[in-house]
Image 1 (cartoon, rainbow, N blue to C red):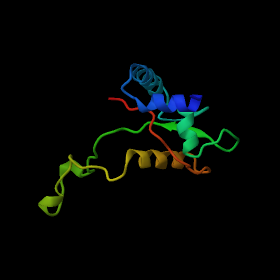
Image 2 (spheres, rainbow, N blue to C red):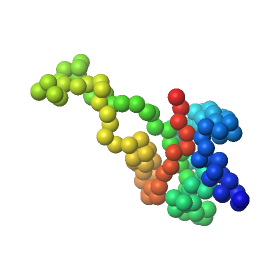
Image 3 (cartoon, one colour):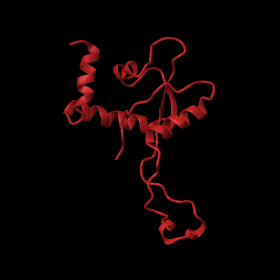
Image 4 (cartoon, helix red, strand yellow):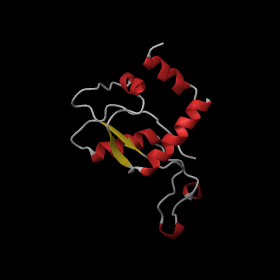
Length: 125
């Protein structure tokens, strides 16, 4: 079993002792960094290569942290207008995925580059 295959099998079993420990340590490390920061190399090289990354000039890797949870409607003092069906403020679900949000934010920060792809690394409770 080659290195890439080993990493792939390890990443599949997220509940295993090794992976749980790795994810917990990485989570702490990532929390100490800025929300958007450039990484020297991918966190998961096997996954990155499947997504189109190549280890050569012109390819850069960014990591981004996106806050999870629902969306609150921005209304002044909770005053909504219209029919009762549109009165909701708190229990709204954002219609875009966290992945799309992350890609958009990185794309805005690095306007001279193009976003190739993205993948999940970790999530905090």
